[in-house]
Structure formats: C-alpha cells, structure tokens
Amino acid sequence: MNELWKVIRESLPDIIGGLVVAATLALIGTVFTKFGLVAAIVIAVSLAVLILLFLCLYPRKYSIGKVSFKHEKELPHTTFSPFQKEPIVKLGNFKPPLSIAAPSPLVESPAFKNLLYFARRGQCRLFIGSGVSSEVGMPGEQELREALWAELIEMGQAVRADATLPELATALERAAGRPHLIQVLQCLFDDALRERPWERGAYPWIPLLPPDLVQVIYTTNWDDCLKRAFEAAGRTVREIRYPGELPLIPQAEHAIVKMHRDFQVPDGPLISEADYAIALNDIQQGTAGTLWGHLADQLAQFYFVFVGYSLGDQTLNLIRQAVELRTGTAGEKRHFLVASLSPEEARAAERWACVRPIIATPSEFFQTLFSEFQKGGK
Picture (cartoon, rainbow, N blue to C red):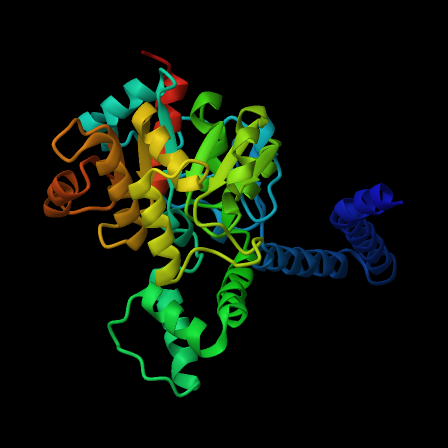
C-alpha cells in the first residue's frame, strides 16, 4: 500500500497537468461552438498567458548529471556534494564526476603530496575534530561556551567572561550536577541534527575514500554525523566508546573510535576539567586498556591526519601530548594537521604540535583527497 501511495504521489503533477490540458481544450471547443473563432482565440491566448505565468512562478526542477535538485536555491555553489536534503541517488551507487569542481591548489602542497603517498600505502589514520561538524552547522566551541555561560548566569553564578569550555562545564556540573550539564549540551546537538548535517560539507566524501583509510577512524566529536554518513552510503559501522570494545575493531567494516565518548554514555562526553585531567593522565602513563593508551600506540604505528582542530583547541593539547610521548618534539614530524591556518599559524603548528600543516577547510581537503584517489597513481 505504501508503494502504491508513493507512485500515486509522484505521478500527481502529471495527472493534474493532463486534466488541465483536457479541460482547456474542452473550454476552447465550447467557446468556439457558441461564440465563434475570435472568442476561442481570445480564450486560448488568455489561458496560454496564465499557464506561462504559472510556470514562471512555480519552482522548477533542475538537474546536474544524475542528481536532481528541486529548486535553484539547492544548487551547489562552490563544491559539488553527492548529498542533498532528499537525495535522489544513494551515495553507495554514486560516483561524483571529477569535472564538477575545479582542481584545487591543495594538490601542489608538499605536505598534501606526502600524505597522499602514505595514504596510498595504507599507512594513514584519520582523526576527525569538531571543525568538520561545525562547518555544517553543528555547535562549535563558541556556541557551547555561550550556552553554558548563559545557563550559569541564569542560575546566579559568578562567571569569568574568558572562562574556557572545560571551566564552564566544571562550574555548571558543580552548581547543578552532571545530568543537568549533559542535558543542556544534548539539547543543542539534537536541534542541530534535525538539519541532517551529515549530508553536507566533508561528511559525504569520507565514506568514498579507500577502505584501508576509513576502516578505523578516530574522533573527539560527540555527534554521530560520521556514523550517519557511512550508513547513508550503505556501510555498516560500529562505534567504539569503551576500552572493552577495542578488540572488536578488526571485525568491523568501519569502526569509529569515540575518544571523547558521546551522549550514549551515562556520564556523557568528555567536557570538564576533571575529564581532561583523566585523559591526560592516561596519555602520559600510556595506560594500557584505555582509549587514550590505545591511541598512543597507534600514533607510533601510523601517520595520523588531524582534521577539524585549531591551535587553541583543548583537545589538540591532549593530542600534542600523545604525539610528544611517542615521537618526541625533536623527532620526525609524522603527523598532519588540516586546518584553515595563516602562514604564521602553520609555522607555529610545526613547532608546537610537531605536525605537518595542510592549509584547507575540511570539505576542500576531503573532496580533493577523493579526487586524487580517483586519478590513481602511486
């Protein structure tokens, strides 16, 4: 019954159009019979003008290649995305044409060329940060700070204007309890997820990358946009939130390791000063059997690509500690940081975080990376 209703609903515009044409011909015939040829011509011209006026005002349907867009406002602007609000073509069967976007200057970057070399040999791991989600409308650090600050002010708490996100979270946790803190944060994320952000920006491109690059992905994001993007591409995903789930990674088609947990965990995501202190201790001690201890081991084996982090990010400080633990600040710059950096910030990233900077937005980086893999090469 659902399929029948779907067919009827999709055919409704054609049915209505046919009825309008039939009614128009009948009206013209009636006028011609009763009032003569001149009256019939006047009626026909009037109806034609009305129809043309209707077609100009009614939202038309456009198409690019195999993907349809219901209104011109939905056309892509600078980059082509295989997802739209209601995708006509499922990503799992879709191969984005490489000619849609102009070649990116990113391909000439020495750091990007090095990354591509290691990625083609299965030696890279992706580490996704909040910048990938905030690019498509998910709450970023500033929005979270403002929400917690407003909540504390409403409760009559004294708050410094320059308080960091972990400091604000700690203050609200002390004032109203951990469950209230998590509830405030989750409401922000639930509202943003209603806009289906995983269908935009960098997310649609990530599942299209080679399997050995995306079989295991690490992230500090609380949202499940990454998981939803893979599911939209027809893939199965296992999210790893607890140390006891780490042995399940090799069995998964795609595993997403949630380093900061998420709202599915009773204690919620990693957010307060105490949370960061525990994570930092796990890194410094190389604590076996923890998520951060596992990450420290992986940093010694693979070239990590950090996407969606800024130099002032508290999480990047944790990652820097893990990098220093395994490689040393004076050692080889094994890992990569993809961010919209100024030349000064790029040099600072090399000195402070011991990474090779790649200056790009998340969506530009992943689309260019996909395009280069499509071209082949070694």
